[in-house]
Length: 118
Image (cartoon, rainbow, N blue to C red; front, side, top):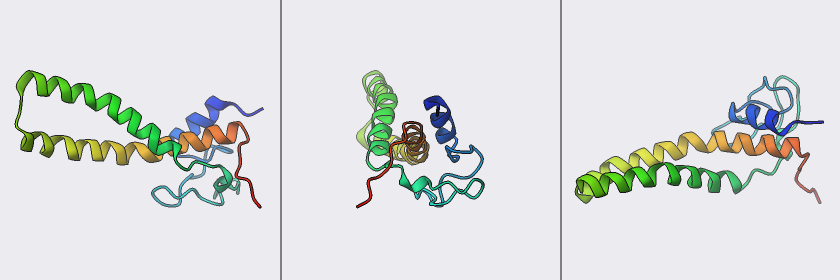
């Protein structure tokens, strides 16, 4: 039986959920259709919208309290806050999105959840 934690751990490392050695992505977010090590087809796992929602949820919960604390404590002007928070949140989202997508593919792999073909 496939372990959910194994799938999540391999996905967080952006590795193939089947073997744990091959790269999961062929591009930034493009899931490889064929693992270079075990030749598993990882493109059958539906990781469409969930990674974006989870990424926004995580980044929002991490940065919103920090932003609110700094805004309440020191009251910096809008331009300074925009110059700090917009790039910081953008970088955090761009870094976290492939990691969360990998974990989503790992969960789908563990539960044998694949796309329906017609």
